[in-house]
Amino acid sequence: MRLNFVRFAGLFGLVLMASACSQTLPPPPSPVANFGAPTESRVFAPTPSLAPDTRPDTEPTSGYEIDGAGFYGDLHFLEADGAVRAVYAHAVEGDVTVYAELRPDSQWLSDGVRRFEGYAEDGAAITIELEAGVCEVNDRQYGRFAHIETEGGAYQGCASEIGPQPSWSDELPRYLPLIRTCLDQSQSSSMAFVRGAGRAQVLHVAATGPDAVVRMRFGESGRWDCTLENGQARWRVVSDDAPAREGEGDPVFILNVMPEAGEACAVYERVVDQTGETLGALGYDACLSGPMAQLEPGLRF
Image (cartoon, rainbow, N blue to C red; front, side):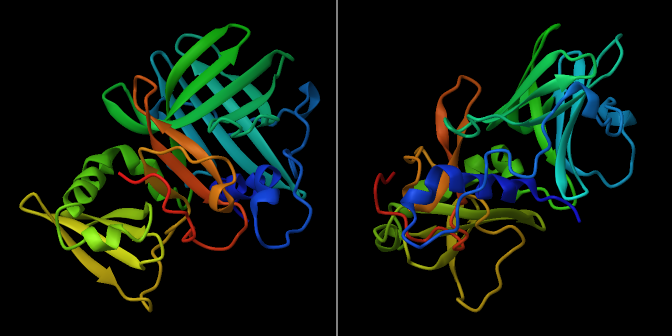
């Protein structure tokens, strides 16, 4: 069975959000539930970390590929004997590849950032921070910034999700202009009355042929698809009977706002630009109640 680590983030949110949920929940899991403690003796090396053009062509495990100036990294999540293993390979050009075993640290998503900590094979401490945003390196655009701290130095790069079913949000930087256009034009169109139903949530974005389709929800107004036609936003209501797209609502994206922890019983991951300015937030349903349709109107844009 392959680990859906994006879903793990939502489950971990129960630790932070249990008191915010209106329904009765089971006891929240530990911040490192099912993760073996990273020690020098339990390092398990994943597929060696290689440059993008020489990485194995086999189906990857769940995790992240990290690309930076002069280094590469592979963070893989493996499941064996009922335990989840987070293993990292760090390759610096001209040096040997270093392997480490990690787990989420106690401050996981406490300020909207994913953090991991653990030890390399020689016992040296290593930490990784992944922050959602518009990151560019080596002429490529990525959906996350990566910050790696080792005893040998600090490394800055970008990360992309890998696995059988990467989240739609990994392509968020590519679709941000379309999302902004849809929302900006909705203020002066027939969609204006729909926007009054509550805060806008992007449930999914995907390219269908030459065009990309933004699927949104405004409060409890149902689902709407937005496409661009000659630079103009075109909206179409989505039938209640229409099936959800793969990954729809997991997570949702909220533009220009970083909600308070626990709002709508969700855990939030901050999305930033290259200057650190907040662009919005990715929200994961921590109460396992489906897409977050109960957001208060709150801040509108």
